[in-house]
Image (cartoon, rainbow, N blue to C red):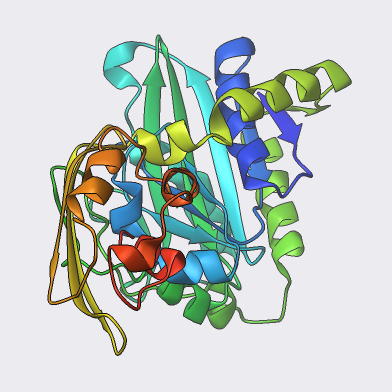
Amino acid sequence: MLIIKRHNTDPYFNLATEEYILKNFEEDSFMLWRNAPCIIVGKHQNTLAEINADYVKQNNIPVVRRLSGGGAVFHDLGNLNFTFIKTGAKESLIDFRRYTEPILEVLQMMGIDARFEGRNDLTIEGRKFSGNAEHIWKNKVLHHGTLLFSSHMPDLADALNADPLKFQDKAVKSVRSRVTNISEHLKSPMDVMQFATLIQDHIITKYPDAQTLELSDSDHDQINQLVRNKYNSWEWNFGYSPNYNFRKVFRTERSGTLEFDLDVDNGIIRSIKIFGDYFNRYDTEEIESVLNGVPHNEVEILKILEPFNIEDYFSGLTLKELVAGMF
């Protein structure tokens, strides 16, 4: 068992690291790592339906899709993540209890009554502190989980507070859970890195063949290439989302009420209709027409609409207000 040292807190790099190790290392491995504030969405989710887009934009929060399924989660430096990558027989790879057992053992040694509950959660007094997910690649499993230790709960709630009325789709929706921080249940004070050391020491005891490893410069170069090509791309983080219908209604004093209805396929707008009680000089079908085939991406939509004088189509409305209505 390799215990791979992780120091980077960049979420794009950290998610890419998991895929790189899964597909390039032969040895079984274990990792502990943290992300700076970000949202991590499950592989099969509609990203825009999971996040509070306004909050994410205002706070410049990265949104990254992971390899595994499951729901969206908010990470910050008070959240510790753990990853097991193991080779085995395909019929025995999926085993949430097996990979969460070492975490429970550490907490129980600390006098905390932590339990495995439901499909993939760890709880204390019925409140969730860890969600887990798995991804199978060939004859290997990647199991990773979150450990809320001292996360800022208001940020978690605000970042994932999406409007459920905006979207109709076949994507997997996250289940909002009552959550707790591990730090609230400690018998004596401890910080997140001290907690990480306890877990790592326990893994070394549990796996007598365990060896620690630092990633090489070559490893970092290849991971950064994966970041550029995949994990920091709109195509993976947003465009990969399943097909969905998006609807939003908003009102301004100067332009009146507008309603946006979009059909989006693999991140691309296939049709858009704009309704409302607005006034206009030119037919708004021109705006609808140029947006067909454009990614449902704020930057791309702004680029397409920049040549238009938006007030000619929606009296009293600015370009930024118009585009904001599509998210």
